[in-house]
Length: 68
Image (cartoon, rainbow, N blue to C red; front, side):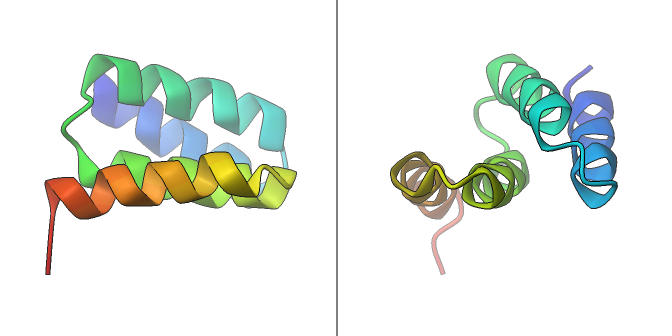
């Protein structure tokens, strides 16, 4: 259930548990790779971790799924 993993990942990120957050958000992205919001949340967590190139890639995925 991708939305549940995304919600848990976002909560863990808010609590400062970045590694745990990344695991849940990656699981959410694997389960529903077409959810732009999950890619944005994953990009935030990656950025906090200092993985900026990976964060940029996730943002590109989100923009392709939901262009403005």
